[in-house]
Image (cartoon, rainbow, N blue to C red):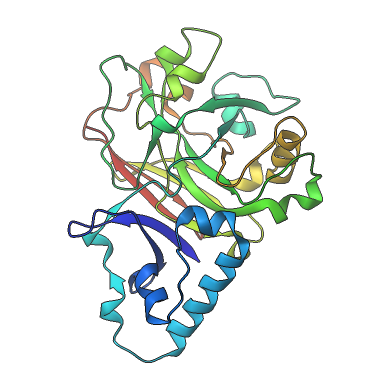
Length: 297
């Protein structure tokens, strides 16, 4: 399933939906139709595995029955997306995780994963406009695959990791390089308000069993800037999650940004760097998951 969070002009409450080719299927309406009293939210589906199973069964019944789908579907043009996870306990990012990226920014290949954190204030939704703060000078993009943790993970091995992943989504981990490089810590230049848009959907892990060969593309104003593949990660997702779990306990809804491929602005010669500016349209696409779109303002 591809799960989304959204609201509409007529209903400003947070709503859970399932993305179909024909539109966004409203989960509350679906559950009421089949007299299912469960209260489905993104958090409840992530935290309660049986909710995910129940929701799949409702979806199967929806496809099986022949009825007027207009009462169940929202068109994406008529909804306002929300971050697919709004209140994660932790947002952890992996730096320097693609060989060609490390080379283009003149870094050193890491022997262990490089982690840093960002905070919930940085989260933004699909199609949300991203304000460039007055302190920002050299804003860059960063297309990334994000892992959404599905259950509490502590001291797990790599072979167990798949059991702890709820799903995958898309992120654009924006950076202001001047702020980031003003100290030895990366956090401040990475966690400016709304600098980490995510979405538009979470693809549940049962529909993406192998995330190790996914094409990643980022466009700026329809010009391709980044093209990569998750097969080029230095540290694989099982390694990253297992390594983290040996140091800290991961919780349902935690977000793990897994790094970005080559093609960032900071990797170009100084004379060729054209930093992002107001009105730039950014689109991140990851194979099988979808496209995350945001415009700077």
